[in-house]
Amino acid sequence: MFRNIIAIVLGTIIAYNSVEAFQQSARRITASAISMGGGRSVAEKGASQNVMFKQLRSKLNEASKIPGFFEIGDGPSDIDLFCKSNKDGTQIGDCPFTQFLQLVLLKKGIKYNIKPTLPDAKPAWLLEKFDGKMPALVHKGQTMVDSLAIAEFIEKTYPHSSLTRQGAYSYQEVLEKTSGFFPALSALIKNKDSSKDADLLSKVESQLDLLDEIIRSTPGKYICGVEITLADLYLVPQLFHAMVTLEHFKGVEFYHVSGEATRPALENYVSRMFDMEEFNDKKVYYNIDQVIYGWKTARGDN
Image (tube, rainbow, N blue to C red; front, side, top):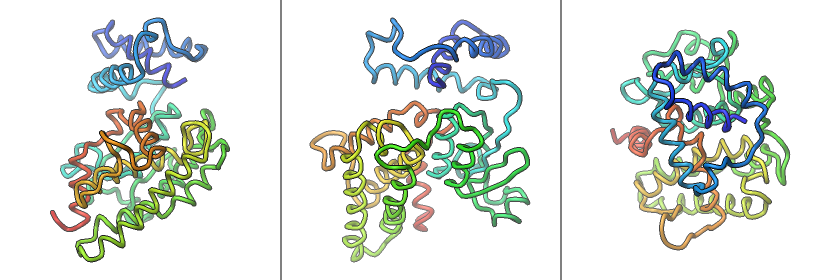
């Protein structure tokens, strides 16, 4: 439903020259959009999914430059999401766990304010209650940290468009099975002793093999089955970091843009998920250079 609403809103942007007129129109069409069914429109039928995605991404990124675009809705947002910022504090940083939470919020169509925060600009409550840990959520005065706990809170508080439906696996089962992936990746990328690389890389390779096996064993195009879940949204930002860092720091290519895939199921899955509308939303996306800069800092290279 959220995708239908976004598509209609973006189509309306061209017809209106002012933010005020655009916002009024968006409010009017939301009610009618709710009753619309799925399927492709007549105009869409001649376009491939890839072309449609590129067009939507372009329109969304242009629309997001309009002041107040993301604030369209009925009343103010109840959610503030504090997160790591880039080096000058003007944009989000490269935190995969913040990206995960933004994917959850966008998938569910929930309004929220993103608060990129420099280390020396963290609010007092964040330092006093949570030792400055981010991402951190503020919801109607309630505060919390830990990205999975926040995601589960969002799911329970806003139960529409469920992201926790049982498939071949539950999202909890997948996250438990794959819990070693990001720690193994982090250990390898941070390592500067080349004599240890082979052993550390083998652990990452084993985790990638496990992911490939899980995806091959489930029906549908998502990691738990036919429906997207928190597990997909949690893993995709980590896979993005893996794609960038393995090649940049260790010369290892696990996602083959050209040539034969090493793990076809995993690589096809990654390709689909990287094309996801929400993953490429301007509010969520950070580029490859930011990922490299973030890991250089973690390695002590900067």
